[in-house]
Length: 287
Image (cartoon, rainbow, N blue to C red; front, side, top):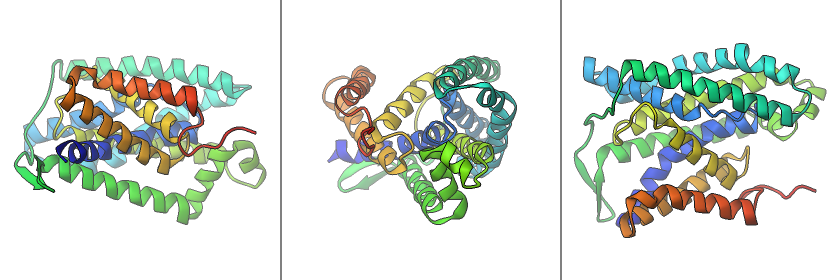
């Protein structure tokens, strides 16, 4: 039961980070390799505001959300949109976006190293609580609840609002969406900005119970990519289920075998998905 509870609580924040990348890749078709660095920026903001001014990380989430949304929209508008417009094929766009965001990740790492060179962590809501007989920290439980609420609101927005349906339409076919009057560049920019905002919020939440450093973003980028591929590109429901699977598997491996093998277990799952179900758990096979 301890493994299951810990895995489920961890999966909440994993799902939040993966949903951010899913919006960026599934809708805007941008493979953002700087996704993990955006997460660490959100975490660093929570750490800095709490240690310097005693501002609650939960309130930092409210501050981080609009700032990260605007920042990611500007990145899409001035760095990535020119790549989208010049790319003749989807393959060209993916190569260009990978190179651009890979370089951007190094810029962000350099900025964060200059701000906080080493590891950073703090104690917030660290008191233990019992869930179904399993003991965990209150910070993990609160982070899970916030992640679940954000995921639920995102699901409602995508399925029950006009702008959300437009986002889903672009994720299925940008060409067909343009033919029915959807402003594809605007919707793609919205999805990219929203994805970055969700990732930064996930970073602020994760910082309350995980020790981080400026260079750890690549680990979260890879885990988010594993979840996106496992669940199916563009499928929020699949991202949530895949995050639960990854969270439980990592917790099981860390508890029963060796914490150093958690990343290896994640990659093993990734390889199995690529070999036996490359379209993801909820994706459809191409015709």
